[in-house]
Structure formats: C-alpha cells, structure tokens
Length: 576
Figure (cartoon, rainbow, N blue to C red):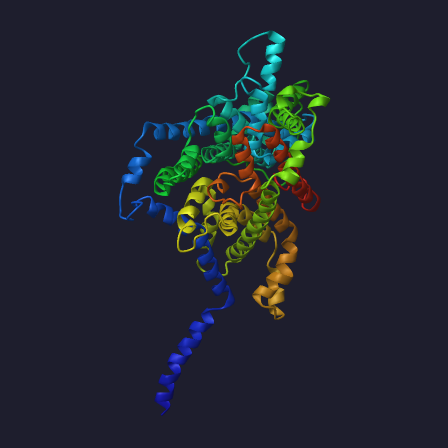
C-alpha cells in the first residue's frame, strides 16, 4: 500500500513542480515572446515567404525576383538609392562634425542657439523641409531664383532643388543632427590630456583636432554616417516630393508604384529584401571596422575637458553653425510661414496677398484635415504607450536577469533598429492586411506597425533607466512580502517615471511625423497628417500644404515643450 501511494504521489509531485515553474515572470516572458514574434518576426517571415509565392496560386516561384530586378528602371532605382544614401551621409557628416567639435570643445559663442537649431532641424519632418526648399529653390518660382534673376538679370536659375544633388542636400539638412548627437556625446567624454600632450609636442589646434581628437570619435562618426545612409535609402517623403517631379526614381518610390492598382505585394516584397540585406551587411561592416582597432582614451574620472581658445576663428565657426541653421531651419520655416498665409505664395509679402483662408479651410471645411490630426495624435500616443510597456517589461527582465534566455528578448526588441521602416510596413501589409485578420487600413494595423517600428527607441530608453536604479530597494520590498509585479508597480515604476515619460514623448514625436511606414498602411479614414501632407503636395497646393505643415509643427512643438519642462531641455538629443 505504501509503495502504491508513493507511485501515485510521484506524478502529482512532478505536476506540481511543473506548475511551480509557471510563475508570473515565466508567463510574462512567454507573453512577451509571443508579442515580439507577432510584431517583428511574423511580418518579416511572411514578407520573405510571399516574395517566393505566385500571386494567383501561391506556388513557389522565383518570378517575383525576376520581375523586381528584370528591368533597367528598377535596377537604376536601387543604384540611385545607394548613391543618394552615400551623398546625403557624406554631406551630413561634413555639416555636423565641425558643429559638434565647436559646441563640445571650443569657446565658440552662441552654443545655446546652435543646440536649439539642431533640435529644430531634428524635429522638423524631412518632407516638410523638402516643401520649404521647393518654395525656396524651385527653378522657376523659387524665392532664391527670383531674387537672383532680379539682381543679375540672368535667365538660368541660381539653384535647382529638382536635381540629384539638390535632393541629397535637402535630406542632409534634416539628417545631420544624428551625426551631431553621436559625435558631441563622444567628445564630451574625452579628456583634454592627450590634446594638451599634442600641443606640448608642437601640434597646433587644427592639427591636434585632425590627428588626435577626431580619430578618438571615429566610431561615433562612422555610426552616424551608417545610420544616415540607412535612413536615406529607406526614406520616402523627400524622394517622392522632389524626386518624382525630377524623374529620379529610388527604391522607396518604386515600391510605392508596386502598390498602385493592381497591387503587386509579392514583387514589392522581393524588391524590398535587398534593403534588409544591405542594412544587415552595413551593421556587420561597421562592427568589423571597429573591431580591428581600439578607440580608447585612458583617463580617470578626474580628466579635465578644457575649452580650446580659438581667438577670431571662433566667429568663423559660429558663422558655419549659423549658416547651417539658416539653410536647415530659418529659411524653410520663413517661406513656409509666408506661404501658409498667402493667397498665392509666389506673389510675395504684401497685405493684399495676406489671407487666413488656408487655415480656415483646413480647420473647418476640409473633410479629412481634422480627422487626420486626431488620427495622428491617438495613433502616435497608443503606439508610444504600447512600445513603452513592452520595452519596460523586456528591459526589466533583461537587466535583472530574471530568466535564462533574457538576451533573446533583447535581440527581438532591438531587431527593428536594423529593419528599414518601409520594409517593416510591407511586412505588416503582407502578414496582416489580408485574411484571416483583414486589418488593411485599420487603426490597429497602423498602431501595431508604429509600435514595432519604434520599439528600439523605447527599449534603449527603458534599459538605460532601469540600469540606473539599484535593485536593493526592490529586494527589500520582496523581503517584506511584496510580489515581483507589485514591487515593479510601487517601487521601480515611480523611480523611472521621468525617464519613461521622456521615452514616451520621443516615440510619440517620431511616430507623429512618420511617413515611410504609414503611406503603405493607411485607409481612406485613417490617414495621418504626414500622409495627408503628401497627398496635398501631389495636388500642388503649396499654400494649403504650408498651413497644414504649420499645424503639424505646432502640435510637435507643444509636446517638445512638455518634454523640456518635465524631463529636461535636451531630452530628444540625449544619448544614454
């Protein structure tokens, strides 16, 4: 009898042991894995599978790739994208590195102004800046060319934005803040001791900067360059607004053409796969280049960072920074402001050309303007909230090492960083637009796509915040009887609320201006402000476009102001 009872108890004990393994943290880990697979892995896998499927029968085929790369026009678009990425990243680096060095290491005046202009260039949507430069440098009616013809009597334009170099320059004017942030953050950590040693050995200021300082921040320069290259080849707004009228075809505009009636999602998926491969290869190249050489400044905590005295040259550097601000922010904003209050923007500044009709039409007469404002706010808010919740839970499990396979969660959370937004959008379209979910054009599909797209931003913020909180208080709460989730809710979350608010605001702001992903997923009643801006620009009504762009900028700046008030004035430019 005793042996029978023991045998009966053994399965029950094993069952209880297995149930014990399903503690809340383990269940949470499983739920997070499922959520990340749904948001990231499944869309990419579906896009890969559909690129090998025949549209009608679903049979395996390579014809989608043959179609995608079987015409010279499609190959030219890929070549144009790669060249555009290289040129834009090069121009951005040339613009940003001197600015970062000036702000971080020298006695240049106007550093606060420079910071404000970098933030403004970062916040302004690239496609809105492109519209501003069309008004400035259009070959026929652009303000700069009108002034040039009036002053010189010349017939040919001074500048023409509808060129390959013009498009690359406009993209660079709104991409350089990324290099600036990377390089300045690295320069702020470098002591002046090696620069002082170089000066003692006879090197001048410029030689020291070129041979000592910049090589130490080479990883940051390379990282910013590669990031801008990848952002550029995945950018839709500026290449569409400037490139299509100039007959410059790139990968993103070609993908958009594959989604015109009839939709050829299989060909689009095949055409998008190389973007993902290029991204992965470049990240690998970056790691290879940096692994072959060390970039370390060996200084203790007491290392000083003294400002370099430039004498009269400090005004030359300030002139450089002011010129960049003029081209990237001040001139485009001025001409957009003028156009938004103008009956006809080409007639210039005059009282008889002044009108409020553009704003009145958008706010009270247009059938989609206010709807798109509401869509933008709540899509961005919901995606920021979802991204932050996922990021916080994943980061907590990873940082506190609660489970064995925590690093796998971190990998999934950061994976969208190397996935171009337009590729992510096509993956979501392929996976969830059709049956069985039938989510095409729905708010849910857009929110999920935005959540996946910007999850790495939220995760990086949450991980840095959790690392800054010592686990001792959590352990004390656990000793006193609190559960893990209760400890997070009552102890950890309140300590992180400021940092988490900053992360939420950053995701909200970048989501509110997102075009590359939204353009493929919106429906007739789910258009966002960025998509409606693009639709209006296609109609050529730049007065209405400028007014709507002004509304978008006001909304963005309200949230930027909230972030500065609650989190700190540099919350969008801070790298943790």
